[in-house]
Amino acid sequence: MSNNALTGIISIILGTFYYFMSMQIPVVTIGDLVGPRLFPQIVAAIAVISGVLLLLGEIISKNKKKQKILWDFQERKDVYIRIVLTVVAGLIYGFLLVPLGYILSTILFMSMIMLIINGTRRIFESISFCLAFSIITYVAFAMLLNIGLPRGILAF
Image (cartoon, rainbow, N blue to C red):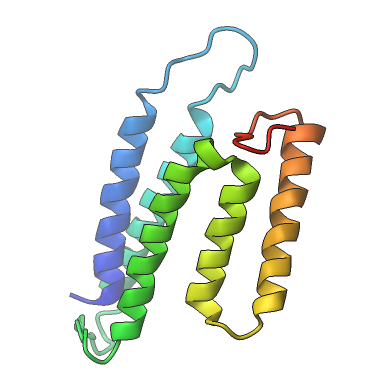
């Protein structure tokens, strides 16, 4: 089995699961005709369609030499460590979002991700980008679009 085939199967499974989970979102009968279900269902459909296309691409390319999945943990150890650190950073972000608020937790999360990706090089640019992104998105969503974001300890 190739990487594309495995990715396609995982994408189909996750997309199907995500679709059925989106069906548990309550239907809104007042206001917006689209409702809160549409976006998750579109994401699920894109995941399933992408998975099917990957599988079809593998089936059609029978003439090409198939590559087996290589689980070379020792050679690509740094990649796997970065993946695990990114997942851990995402979990920490999820837990800190409400207590610390959107701005602080997003600055911390993006700083962790930038540190994972770039290391310590270009640290000033990374921190500047994290600060600017967090503040600009907060102003855009919370103040201009009037969408509630967690304020946390910076209640303004």
